[in-house]
Image (cartoon, rainbow, N blue to C red; front, side, top):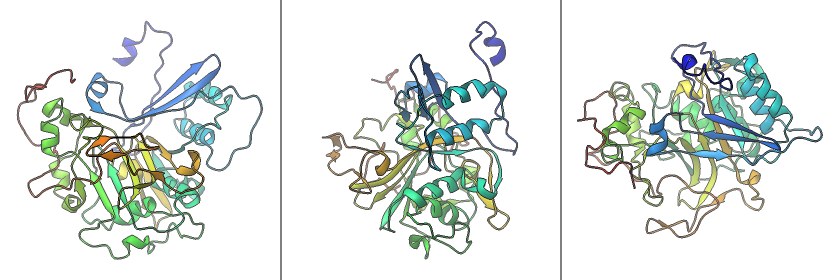
Length: 384
């Protein structure tokens, strides 16, 4: 149907994203814009459907206009252009060669972010560090916080996969082991007994990780009403096998930005100080909280299995022109739930977080909640 609809447009081509492991998805959202004098890259969380642009909360990173490269420049191991080309090469499509050439011919040294991508496959050897949560861990081991501060990790997403019956098996060991990585060249990344300091004594309620995820009431009271839940495909069937997540969950609340009723399709991961004044890093990504998106270690930690294509950008202070401190300043950003000054970086949700109450439940897409009309609560449409 897509191919038929594009036949009259010679400038539109489709490239198949091959999924060689079952249950994966092509989830990346990215745009290239070619100018006569440059190239721009946009990495975002919105799909190419009207509903994603009308009344949801989304995230966009828009690059500078990269100029045409006049001479060859050396790049370090985590160069933006190098990682972008490696990601495009993973599609193994001759149709993308033209864009690979465009990227190769532009100077992308102005990029102030690091790419964190996932591509399907079982990655071994040196490639194990190039994708998924191990890519993030690898970057943070070189450029992350310099010591194991008493910080917290906040994940925020619009879907959750099957993470296992015990939080220690993947979430609070392998995955958080990457997000809590500090600058170090001596950590044994794949030592199955290694855990960051905060996770040495994992308890039933681990305060180092918080998950912002919409409640039933969040969806019900959104601009779209219950129909917004179609873009939040977390199931009660999955949750019943990992109820420990409820201990970490916080409702979607974005009063400071006026977006509490704009259902979140954005996905972010952040490391911040407990008092909410210092942001160590922020990742804007297409990746939800799932093994399929981030990867899971197999064969005694010698290979990383990833099912889906994902792409995100990691903001670190040192690459955003902040050389005198290892954090973005968040203090003074929110006063009485209003933005009084524009910070260097800000979170898409309110802080302090609003923990689930005893009456709150996550939104479940597989339960019947009520009529599916957009004006379920007589909401105005489009939202004002």
